[in-house]
Image 1: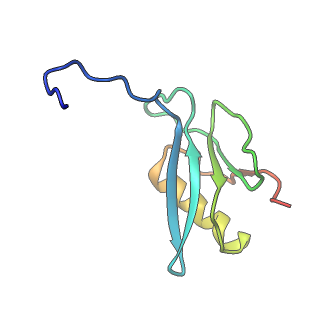
Image 2: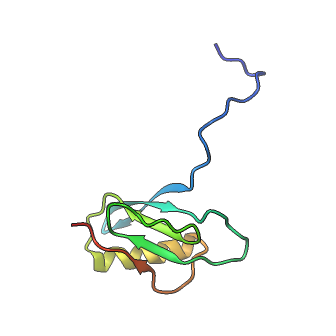
Image 3: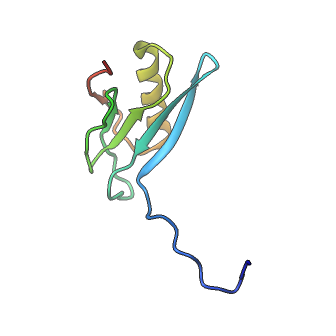
Length: 102
C-alpha cells in the first residue's frame, strides 16, 4: 500500500557509471561513461576510452567502456571523442585508449 506521507525510502547508492550512446550511420553504439570521483566546476578532465573488457580504474578521468558497438574503430573512437567533448568537461586532446577486445 502506498504511503505518500512516509519518509522516502533509500535508493541504491549513487553510481558514477552512466549509460550513453551515439548513432553512427543510423546504428546505435552503446557505452558506459564513468565520471571522475569528484567533479570540480570549471575543471577539465582527461578522457580514457577502454576497448578491453574491464575498464581501467581512474578516479581523475572520464572513462568510456564500450558495450554494443558495430562501427569500425576508425569511425567509432573519433565520434565518441567528439560526443564526450560536447557533453562532458573533458580535455580537448587525444584520448588515452586501452587495448582492444580479443
